[in-house]
Picture 1 (tube, rainbow, N blue to C red):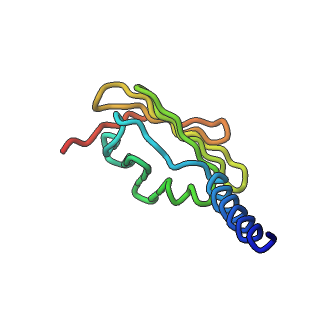
Picture 2: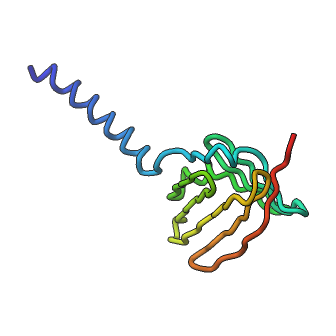
Length: 129
């Protein structure tokens, strides 16, 4: 009986460890369908690319792949028909909020807040085609 129980216990522990570790970083990002695509400000100084399970922000000096950040930092998102929000907490405790509010089908307001200090809103336009 002990010979049968130990392999089962080890398998269960493995599942708990594997799935428990995944839950430490949360589930993948899931932007709402209205925001999927590429969005830039009028001068294209900042661009966001929204996919079904990731967000990538680019600027002249930075590429920020949220899926990669997810591996290290605590990150969560929420969205509805007119708003999408990403909340992050860095290893050092710095809290960030990326907020996207739909203005029209092809424009949105973007605001970033870090430890209570906000920049924005910045108007972004959807790139068509």
